[in-house]
Length: 244
Ligand code: UDP
Image 1: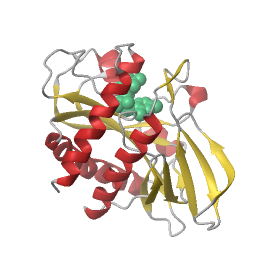
Image 2: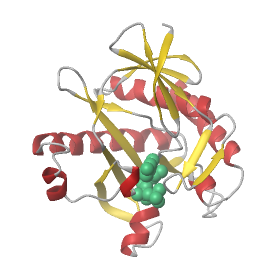
Image 3: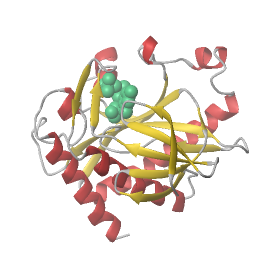
């Protein structure tokens, strides 16, 4: 399937139309941004690594009964996806306290949460992606109560699946962000990507709180060896996939 016009360029991906109006081509970039794009850089090989990891994860989630926009991965940094209307929500699932949760609440980093938290953020760079209450979300008509219920259930199901999968990789899934779209039949589908850019992943074989970081926090916090960490996640994902 050949790509046609550039439809949209985001921070990590370029989306192209294809000959089929229902199918888009996502080109994963090596560009990295953090802190609402105030920090910019390049992580060499990231596009290929994230696209490959995401493709494997989407395939497995589909098998587990989660509808996703994934169709195929024709080259290492390109993904064919079903065209969906993205809901402007970032659905974050947390198993262990880190990042903004710690900054906003004082909960210490690394605390295992009593139960996984599902949070909704408004996907809006101009407003700095604020945390939403259910009331605000309904007031803004970003999703209906039944869609929110379904998003919450899907997010928790995805979390159970991913926790188990990353355990096989000897990695702890600390937290992650999901995006969802709605297809032409109004069905919810998991969209965007699941990769070290969108998950916090801690290496179980490292006790040191800096050395264990295998995700975008290495870039955000200038911890060094960013490419190596992403590569290690890919290698472990590929080995785990072989055993499934
Ligand atoms: N996240 C993301 N994109 C965003 C914001 C968050 O992929 O725009 C991911 C982030 O990598 C982490 C989780 O969502 O795995 C929770 O992020 P948090 O709210 O702690 O924000 P941060 O500390 O990244 O600002």
